[in-house]
Image (cartoon, rainbow over all chains, first blue to last red; front, side, top):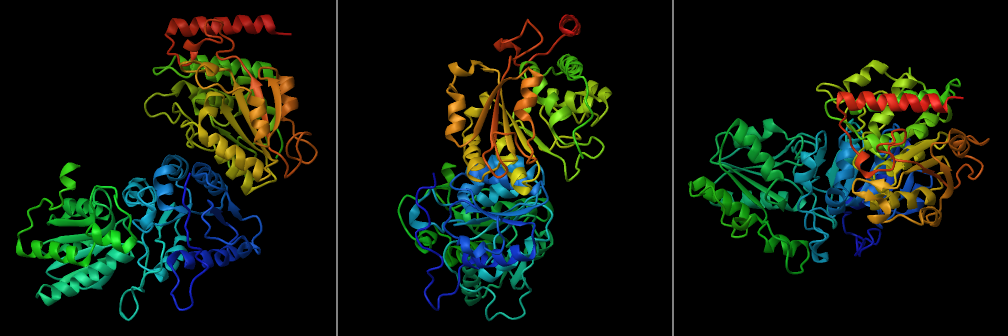
Length: 342
Length: 283
């Protein structure tokens, strides 16, 4: 049912190109499985894995085919038997197609299943809306007990996978498709990645930009530079764990500002922006402007960068939203004509 | 851990039927028909076939049962209580505010492995349990209407492909779903051929005949499924032909017996009917 499968074999990486998050995950998992016999790899015909890589852990790599309901149910049965399955599928097929199986079989039982979802957000690009995942963060953070992580780069993805082993309940880790720049590179002094703890990339300022995911965080950093040139200091928070939310960090980022801008590769309702807005409304109300996918399905082809640009998930959009907040001209509504149709 | 000491299965099944009627006489009523059709199946599984220990419901060497047709909860509760997983007296609390005995099985009830009731989950869950330990037997008890869920067939393909010879599916083939005959909705026949074509070893039995069920569900010398399957071989499906509402002529094989809220008088009358039948059938 998944139609087009990833057209690019991740192992055909040209020399010199940094690894993508999913390649790092692919290479790390067999190593972790060797060290911990609870671990299983449940694949759904993603084409990501090479069966031979699991030769040292016989019987624990299982390609269950193109059948996401059975995938999640089987993972639950294994987890209820003391195992810790890593389930790999594309984000949209996890969070929407298999949702009821995740809710009932995994979340309801609070089982230690790790869902590693590739092609998050618009990463599937030209493959179209059937393969875009713009709802997954909102859905997964609603399920009781789930930890939802969106690593900002390949190294954070590796950390997320490693650290997930210590969590007793279910975890959803959203990865992209292609390689993205190293977020921490050249930024010594940045706190190390830790699931559940937001990462300060710029200190508190006049406004705050809170983002998750590789492209949104990079956009947030560039927006902060643009704002700096206009004399406005912007905090940048990599909120890589949308759930459970680092409330203290969000409150600290928002404190004393004219408002908060959220940036995410997700439909605007319900995702990171929704989580931040809920939190601030409850604890310390300030204006929130959400930069994200308007409530539409992409109607034209494009690669990820093209679509991010076309739908305004950009540094310019984040900077413009922050300036409006700073100058007090943000009306509390949205300029997005698409949203008025929601 | 072994199967429990021999008990009088017929007498046990009779008491389970009384419990079901009692729960249907509670404030919310219950799934009468599909629970009555299941009585012999669950009784023989819990009292003769499965390794289980009511004092240690989570014992690692237990066999596993997942009730895919979660609406059969009151039958499962009756059997678990009779087997000693919790006090029989607790059945009177069924569906009352604050009770752990909900209308579909929940894990808070000792002996329940998985919450079920959203149909089509049971076989996939059993696949996972069976994969985790190929040395134990795993059972998925499915409703025939449930087989209309596509996820059952995703799981069925996988069970065979993975060679889960320690897995047995039992289909409660009572031929009725809420709206009427399964064959009038989305028909399931030829059911045995369908399972066979998915790579399963198929056995068909009278689902109210203890001897036939016992034989179909027996463990073989390899410690897994019966003689038709081998360890790491084909999974087995037992198609158990049953009568929905079995035991109460007023609802037997009738669509309207699917769910019942029995008044005090109706419950009393039903118990009298059950007991009269029991006396007639007693050896």
